Amino acid sequence: MKRLIKVQYRRRRQHKTDYLARRRLLESGLPRLVIRKTNRYIIMQIVESKEAQDKVIISTYSKELLEYGWPESFSIKNLSAAYHTGYLCALKAAKNGIKKAILDMGLNISSKGNKIYAAAKGAIDGGLNVPCSEEMLPDKEMLDIDDKILNKMKEEN
Image 1: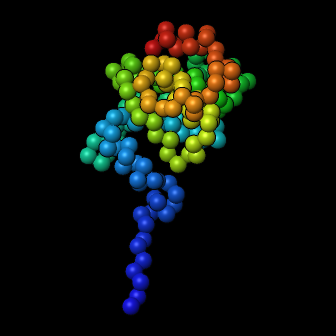
Image 2: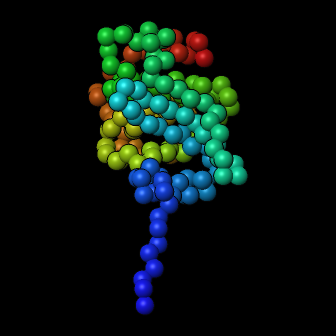
Image 3: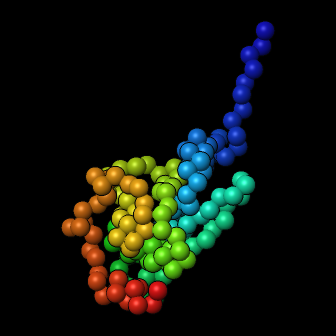
């Protein structure tokens, strides 16, 4: 008798989607705080899912930091930029009436104090309620927080 081979979903085979983790996030019923890092930017989105369709409500890119006085000679993909991007995303979320979200890291590896958690810490400090373990968040010493930029973000949002 021949063995039947179960073929995985295409996005699972391509290592793009973890369907078990996605299902758990969707069953929570909360909007997702999606954090992605590319070679050049930190991208944050708040996404709602209804009837198997995702809708992006808010999106923030680390490139937007340049509008708030971020020095052009500084990197816009380091820990500090991730923190400030998270803070900006939280301010935009508060403006749209979103108070709570659940963290969606995608297929990124979870390690203590990485850029994903720096962005999450910025969102938490900005007023967004994101359930996350305190021990995974980076320390204040690791983040070069610029109060002038944060104040300018508050004024404009």
